Length: 274
Image 1 (tube, rainbow, N blue to C red):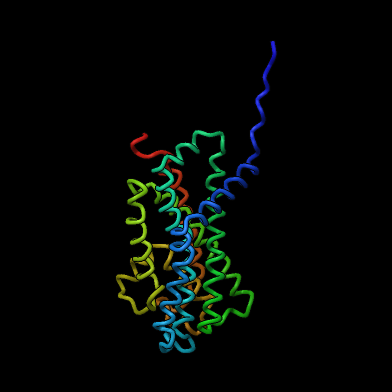
Image 2: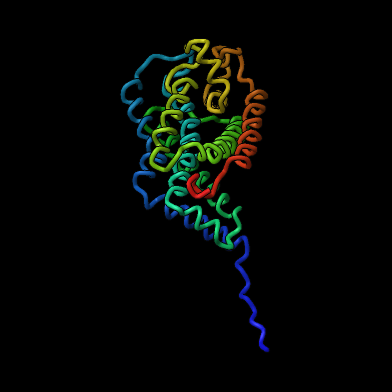
């Protein structure tokens, strides 16, 4: 009697590399996704720069575009993570793609690692483009000391982590893939309007500031302002300072909340599949 030996399954590292490659190829093959997720914040920067580039300073020594670029970087991180995943995952679920993946021997962690790498890749390209356009076209000044870049790093890391986790969790909200953009995009746009991206945050109504303070984007924009604006500008913040400790705390809390929600709500199948 002969014994057949099953071929060994690929290692987690091999499967993960394949998933990362698949995610990147899939994203860049979809022109709509590239334009909407990757280039839309860049297009907004150019449009707002053309309209408001010559506007007076929003604070002593702070041109409008310096303020705006800081906010757009945070908004770009939100777009690359929360908005991207909360739209794409329901589409993949609705087409049965997630159901088929869950039925393979692929470690489920490889799928999420692929999404995380995609988010990080898009966020880096987007941020570089925003900074390059800001510097070359609108005279935006980059930080000159390492401490500010360190702040940039941890704000971006905590912000994109929290928004990625919330995006994965929120992907279970839309009923199907077709409704996902209609549900997610207005939420992202609303958060940008109330979080100090398009307008000076301290000039917004108090109730709007209070509402924005619940969500990560407000703290991400505040953290980015602390990187790109002079220290004197923190006097114009509602709390009179950059509040780095509170920024870190709120974003860390959202990381935990997002992770818990992911574990409780993520589905590989549509509701009709059970």
